[in-house]
Image (cartoon, rainbow, N blue to C red):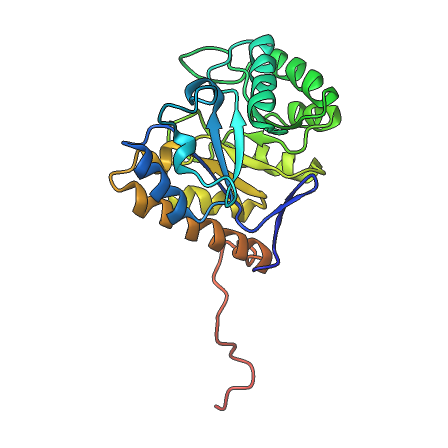
Amino acid sequence: MTQDLLKIADFSFNSRLLIGTGKYASFEETRQAIEAAEADIVTVAVRRVNITDRSKESLLDYIDSKKYTLLPNTAGCYSAEEAIRTCRLAREVGGWKMVKLEVLGDDKTLFPDIVGLLEAARVLVKEGFLVLPYTNDDPIVAKKLEDIGCAAVMPLAAPIGSGLGIRNPYNIRIILENARVPVIVDAGVGTASDAAIAMELGCDGVLMNTGIAGAKKPILMAEAMKHAIRAGRMAYLAGRIPRKLYATASSPLNGMIE
């Protein structure tokens, strides 16, 4: 499994678990969760993290940029213009080229605004960003984002922070069937079995935040998610047995001595 790398554009990563940094009790707990998850990619909300005044304590003080790939995201942006501006700020201040693009439709569902998302993706791709868009589980939209030039597509499993797990595995399967870029499930994962299911479907990775940060024991859950991602990926590569309505004997009767 050490050579089974997650490849996004020209980058390669050992871990297929991407981890968010919001909702933890402290920056120290965030650091411990990242380490327990053994993640390579850590996403940070540009609008919620102090990246301009380094004289003040910041989450970035607890994340080793030499060890982890920081993925700035546009969480909290409700228009294409706002998301584009946030990505430009991230590149100007931190030199980040790979970004997680979110354009939200409302503050109740936190579903993506697809029109705004497509608009922002077009602009950012043209400006040389590696765009990883948070989108719904619509195969048509996923294909449009890929055609624009996004480096991956990130369909939701369920609403952000809901913990409902994958609500529509059939749409995810169609997205996977048609995609030529990595498909990373983003949002809605609540526990280890949800993550394993995503990987067993053939997803290239899973990004999660609340599922870990909101657990009673976040550090332990981070470790559980690490194992779930690995187990799900291995099961996918191994190939599951077909589902059957009736039993099949595991010990054949042919050749038995009467």
